[in-house]
Every structure is written in C-alpha cells, then in structure tokens.
Image 1 (cartoon, rainbow, N blue to C red):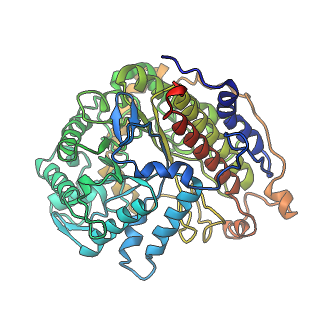
Image 2: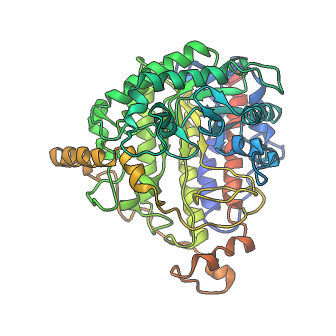
Image 3: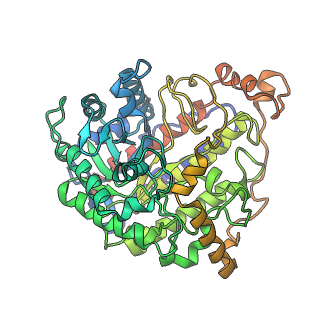
Length: 545
C-alpha cells in the first residue's frame, strides 16, 4: 500500500535540508520548528539515540529494522580513537575523552558510532596474545555506548598503517621488523594470516564484557562488524583477490555472530562489474606526480557486496578533497564541483544498491576539510562542508520518507574537545579543539608504505586501463559554473583584518580559539537527527502506511 502522508509534513521534512542550506550560507542561524505542531524542538540526543535500546538491528530485505521490527536508520559519526583513550595506557590517554565523545554524540542526536576494535601491536600484542588493559578498554567502550543509548560499528583492522592494521599481520607472518620486500596482497592470500584474522575475531566475539556480563556476539549494542577500514588490493584490475577474501571472511563472521550485521568498510570504488561507472572513480586526468584515478584498487562496489558474500550493508566513503581533488580542489573553491561529485557518487550507489544488490546502503565515512591554508577562508570552508552534509542528509531523508534503501550514514568525524583535529575534518560540539594542526603531509616512511601497498603496480595498471579506455576519465557529470558563488561574513571581516593564505599556519591556527567554527555544522547535524527521529516514529504507526 503506498504511503499517503500529510502533505504539509512531507514538505517540511523534505524541505528541511534546503532550509538548512539557506540558513547556513551565512554566519547567522535559522531556528527550525519541531515537526510536531505546537511543540518545541528537542535539544540534542534522545530523539534518535533512543533507538539504541531496541534490541538487535537486522536486515529486512533492503531496509534495517530494530528488535521491535520498527525501521532503524543509522544517524551517526566516526570516532576512531575510543579504544586507545579508554586504555589509559599512557598519561595523556583518558577515559573521560570517551565519555565526552559519547555525550557529544547524544547532544547531536546520534544513535551510532563507528570506531576501531583493533590496535594491532598494542591491543593484540602478537597473534592470539592480548594486553588485558586494552581488552578492558574495549569492554568499557562497548558498555558506555550502551549506557549512552548508542550502537557501534566495530572495525576489525585497517588497510592503512594507523593502529597497526594489515601490515602488522603481514610482518607477524614473516617474522619481520619492517615492511621491506613485503606486500599488502599477502594479507588477503596467506592461509596463516587469514587464520590470524579469524582467531582475532573469535577472541573478541566470544569475550564476556567485564562491565556488562554480556558476550560481544550476543550484545545488541554492536550494530555491525566491519571487515576492515577501507580494504584495497592495489594493482589487481580483476578484483578477484579482495573479492575472495570478502566472501570468506564475511561468511565466517556471519556464521559466528548471526545476530549482528556485517559490512565491508569499503570506499566503494567501481570495478569490472560496473565498467559504465568507471569514470566516477575519483581523480581522473593523468597527472602522474600528484593524482591517481581509483581504477586499480582491487575494489568493486557491486561485486564486493553481492549475494556471494554475507555482507548486509554495502559500504562507500565520500571524500571529494581526496578522490576529486585534482578537478575540484580542497577547501572552498568558488563553485560546487565537490558538491556535484558527491551527489552523483551517492545517487549512483543508491540506484545499484536498490535495483541490483537489494540491500540497505551505508555511507560509512564522508566529510569536507577545513584549514587556513586551503582555498577560501575558514568560514567559507565550513559553509562548503555544510552544503555537502546537507546534500547527503537530504538524500537519506528522502529515501526514508519513501521507504527507500539508504540505511544512513556516519560522518567523519566527531571528536572530544580534548582531541586534536589531526586530519582537518573534525566537528566539535560546544567549542573548538585544542588547536588546528598543519595539513597532513606524507611522512618519512612513505616510500616503504607505497611499496607495501602496491603503488607501482597500481600506477602501471591504471595507466594501462586509461590508455585502453580514455572514456573513463570523462567529466560529463560536472557542469562548471553551476551555483558558483562567494560568501559574505568571512573570517577576514570578523577579525577586521586581511589574512593572506600564505601566512604562517601557526599564526592562523589561533583563529579558531576566537571563533567557534563548527556551530553551524552542529546545528545542521542536529536537524538531520530530529528529522530522522520523526520519520522513524511515524513509520511505527499503521495510519502512516
């Protein structure tokens, strides 16, 4: 039976993203009324976070439902550092950071946090051997999430070097102390390493939490297990290596923890199964020195999430500052290239997840950078970020209203105000973080990192494919000049000065201490959380559909 909701309610729900966008184009804010007539809007968390108490979330066809068989939508964030801080392994690591992050999540109205359940080399000291204080730390992260009414997406390892990840497994298997002559591909193909990975999952899934007394695999707080953060197999144009690993590990985890969801953690690049969409794979001209189209990452969005796997939530990540930097630039250029890129990326995956995979789609990471040395002033960059968030949230809200398959999102990222904005993506609630570090630049180990992660093979593979298929670097999705603009009310005007972007970053890093950068983004996220809470509530009533 088609849903026939109140027309005024639909117009307010669907239109709210447009209202938010208009409000947030200035440094002043618009107050949105609560959708229920005559009621004041809730401030912060319970509106959505109460979903966290409703038992296991499960997949029902292309949608998610909670333990009461009510619709469940992921309204969340990433906060990767919780395990490390909960360990208090060093004097600067504090459990209060975990509590502050969860309180901020509730104030935003979130119901889900995606975080790391690994610190290979410190948590798992060696294969099968664990530091008890880190296991207790993970217990604490899970138990406090439950106390705060939050679900967790727990990632099991990392393609990148942070927190150990796949490279630590490969080093263990080879009794190596460095990455020299090692390859990330071995992580996916070595029987010994695959067994290490399975044993690690069993150690976590079968553990009884010290604080709750509940075994991890029996805890509804854990919404989903994520195979890895952004798994790739660079240079493999066929995608067979990563696909085989995803099939094996997703079925293993689903068999061991059948009540919890499984997701890949994938960035969701397009591969051989969808050659018609290869042109969407990010940076797409051919500047060997700085940019590389994502043609040969070994990832294949459609195949990696199909019925040969036990994946419940097809995953993708959205970073125009990384994957479309060459064309769209970082910061706040005077056009909406990044916005157009984000919209076409999301819409294409929504269509494939709905019509082919028939599974609920999960936007596991998305964000937009802000830093004084990037294009545009700081508040222009925040406005640009708000426009991107608005576009993503609008698509999610419209999907929810129409019984669509967009399960939800976890933005990158929410942090405690005690935690630095290390990657220029952080959103803070109630004030700014400690300082604004320099933009990220490759470290001294980059050459070894590139060799381990198959950069040369990926480069050669990509060049070969682009030579064969020049149509794959076509930009026909982009319409230059559409909605191009500049915004008034900049940092320059607020500070009464004329700050040059060539100024020393340490001077500019003091600016956020005198102006709360993220307040408009916080308000936008809260509006999205309230909208999703209203839709979820309405979907529980028979008269609604």
